[in-house]
Image 1 (cartoon, rainbow, N blue to C red):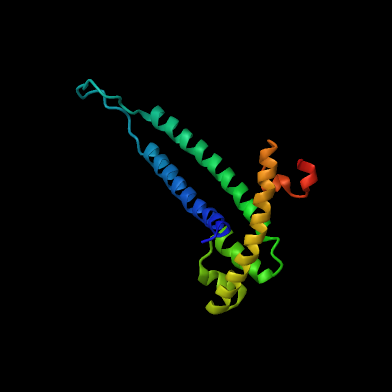
Image 2: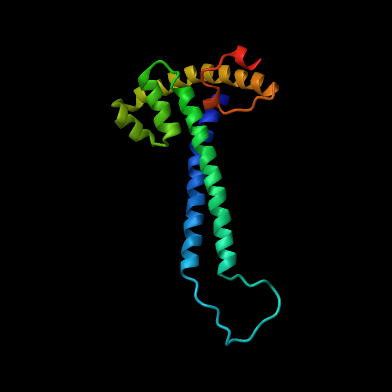
Length: 167
């Protein structure tokens, strides 16, 4: 697998990882809603740290904050990938990569959206990845020059700039 295809696969995997975070957040919210009052009539057992509702709320706030930061990062990376894919000339090839890697559709959904069979789909994917590798390599080189000069930005921020703008 090429570096360019691995880049696209990381975009696809990020979506799944964030869905897990959302599930964790939902589960913790459900736990908080089902907490009952502390029963002080029972014997007190020393040791350990009891978790009360404020501890769970603090944990939920932390999970939500981290999830929001990860979602923001994911959206930025997805936008970057989309802007690279948009540079592919053929619209069907663009749709294949956008559908599968950026929007995380299954291959059957991509085939149905484009209106092609399996053989044609994978021909389009192969050709699209070949074009994407060239686009990706060009942009990676651009980022390396920019980062070497201390200019750290996302691809979206770099759009429209030329090599002369960063040197």
